[in-house]
Length: 341
Figure 1 (spheres, rainbow, N blue to C red):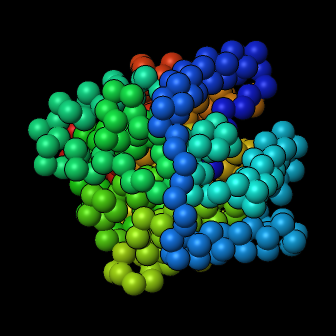
Figure 2 (figure 1 turned 180 degrees about the vertical axis):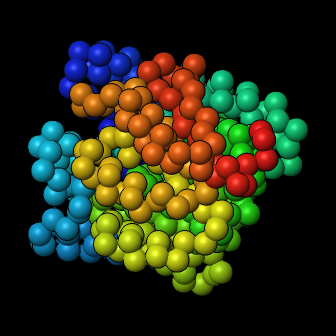
């Protein structure tokens, strides 16, 4: 659940149209050349697909257990319920090995836009581009991602996520691999989790999302060889979709922990945000990206109020994303560990 791109006000609808054109057109063009028939599935792939579909069938045949979908706000509930239903359908009807070509994924969590070139150039200008960023930007073939037009070794989505992390490290002067615990709210299909582990992360990583997207995350992360729920490695990736389970997991959050929400928390109802934010007020670091408005909610005002609630405990960096008008970054670091950057 990274970004729905939905809105209800005239400003929201205009931004949605522009965003849809910018995000989808280049991806559709390159997809014509990059899409290719799949080979016969391997034994491992058959097992992954079977496990994924088993999970989806269990969700389909049981009451909806998603805290997000059960919200009282009909506009939000309809958005996420529709996304969940569509994802269930395509998982059961189509080949999950090419899920990154599905419309539901492209609309909500796979960026392949020209603006990623600006982000790529930012990464290439970094002193550790060759030693650190270039190696981790080589895209995995699992899921059949469309290559980025201006850097075909990677995808726009992977570049976009690397840009998030680079900005976070620049503002906080912390290496993300040094953090003992990361919680990502709305983890999409697991791409950012994958990237952070490529950078050498060995701590606890919690992905919190809708149950259908959690199932897709398990499929993807296991498909590229990452352990989920701590199986087979010191790295521990935990997939959750219930607030009660998240509460349990965060009872003993270690110091220097990071909360990530890129175009996710800002697209949930206000009463649900409050519930989540009460759980994360003790974190040392925050990496958030959001649209100025969503479904009639002024997110700029909302996050300004949230920042004030910390008093002087957190040093905040909040600024508009120039190459993505109508969107902002919000990065926070606990003042006691901030080094003055």
